[in-house]
Length: 226
Image 1 (tube, rainbow, N blue to C red):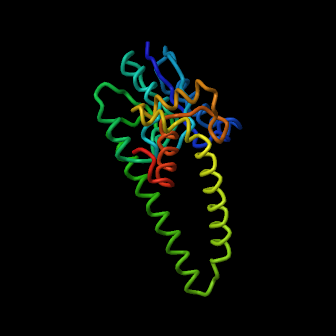
Image 2 (cartoon, rainbow, N blue to C red):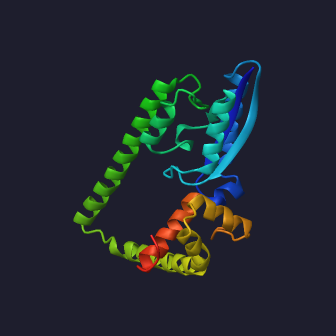
Image 3 (tube, rainbow, N blue to C red):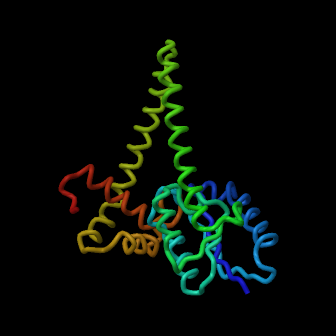
């Protein structure tokens, strides 16, 4: 019997709570299991991550991959970008001889083909970014004023940064002593969750979030420990 470990990812907690993005992933995975998987198959576990695809250190993905390797099951995702948006990260997973990977929306693709698709997708994103910048330069050359929108965006960004600094300061007395003692970001995240301290979005702390919090604190005050 074929076995699968399902991994789903959304970028924000709001998406996770509203179901935005999850319904499409669930649909694609169900279509794969019903129409492309072996006649007899089972899902050993399903993992859900709320994190950006650009972050490499994702606890739920680590758990999913570990279970897939240990059991010999196939790691199943709805789309390739649910694993990552970085071709280098995807390549490292595909090169792992102990890890089998299937993408629901590309049911017949092997590891080599998935690697190619990841590289093409990254090229497309780079091209779209370059095209957008070129369009803005052309608009500016025609005399279109872009500053008003940019000023408003900058004000919002400054306000968001100030709010983040204030939240970070409130947590400084908790996380900095732990960092001084040599605790890892994962251990600090576990301590915050155990103390029922929530993230700004009301969720549980993860290693990457603690790392960003420490970076923000250290950038503000040079006397903070590295």
